[in-house]
Image 1 (cartoon, one colour):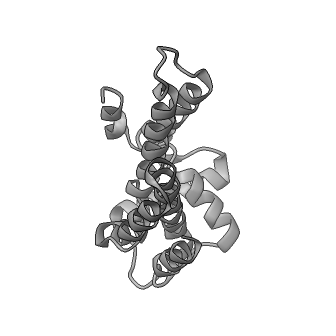
Image 2 (cartoon, helix red, strand yellow; image 1 turned 120 degrees about the vertical axis):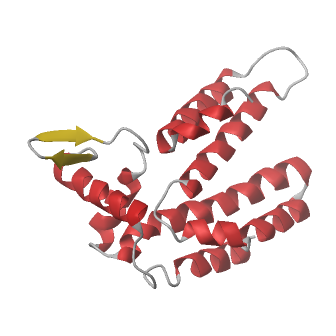
Length: 180
């Protein structure tokens, strides 16, 4: 699983700066720079400052990457590659715990080499981050209600709640996870 994950991470990282940023990525880069300057994602419009009102969590990993690697397309896209790789490991962990290690390896392999997963891991936008936190939310919720007794395990429920908030702050459309 580690070898598959490392191959998946290297595939995601290679070529991150091969194409120029598209408009959503450029906006995330601007908000990432604003986090480094002001401490929160904002944009100055004429004479007033407008804070980011959607994808609120997304610029923070971008800002960390910009602080580590400097201002480049690679640095702006790197957090998505990391979240994509972490999601692969999380898929392995969950599948291995629920159905066995071979299922975990198969599930991780399918995810790691999925064209859509590779596409979004190379873009500085919300899908990889949302996917990671949504999967973690679902797993913690499952663990909270897993036992046959009608007792909800609060530690896992708190974990599910925190991860849901992180999912929602990554993209508001993921709020539809709550009714499910």
